[in-house]
Image (cartoon, rainbow, N blue to C red):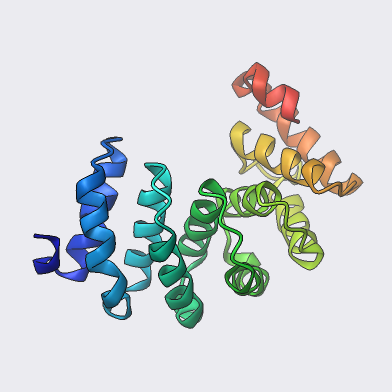
Length: 203
């Protein structure tokens, strides 16, 4: 059974099933039970992949998410921006407001904002807004990082979905950031051929 799996195998199995959208509840329950007491042996990528996989498959195993939150907070300094973003996205999808984890994620994201990719910036903003958690310093840092990447002097780095998510997030938490909105508008014009009707309505 899953108890015989190595930590990486538990994570990769959940991730693989999520990638092909196969929701095998008995298997996922077994993975969660086997993973919880062994999370200290997971590398940070395994932690992020496991939370992402369960969220992607809409399996809100609260004991597992609580355990991953605790271990993720202890290992936050080891995590790269993509892993941190994947984790906060997962908690937003299952609607689990774990404030200590969210505060740790915000601190990490602000500290490493220059390393964050456009997807990291937009998904982090989207996750906090979806959970209706307003962290003004974080949103200001995301705004500054995003404006730089939307600069008209550069080729816009954001894809249309990321622009849409970013705009929606700031609207959701009622932050009127005119410089950011202007930058999003410029980037959206540059990518106008890629915008779907839903993207346009969100922006």
